[in-house]
Image 1 (cartoon, rainbow, N blue to C red):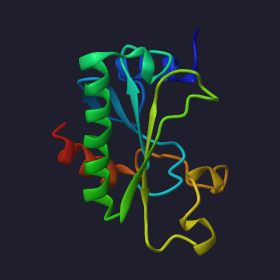
Image 2: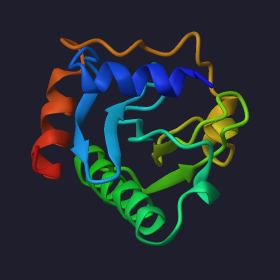
Image 3: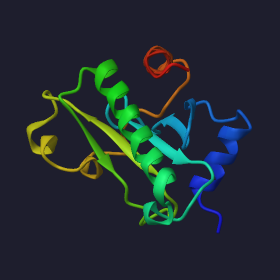
Image 4: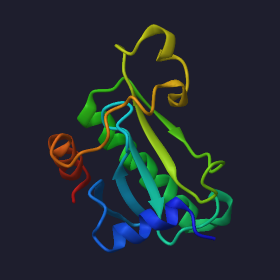
Length: 144
């Protein structure tokens, strides 16, 4: 099965995805598009698997470790008050983790809701120039 996650991982491998932060032991750390909240990132496994339960033992532990390591970096760089982690796979049935910074100054009606309540089409698209500073900071903290 070919999903958007498969295509993104192929683009990461080929050096063709500008949102890439770097290669982690379990996959690829990338910035989200759009940047619904500043610093929103994802972790794509490499190789792609259908869901978290398809990983076992060390591979599963490594993916979850990399996800939280990415979350630690996003927390440090953005100054968020917390990180939300989401592994859904309903729309794109391939494992990928959303790493979402949450901020104290978010609109009251959105602050306690999942990120999916935000205006995705109206959010800033990832742009290599506009997001160069935060991308560089994340890369530095992650050691890429």
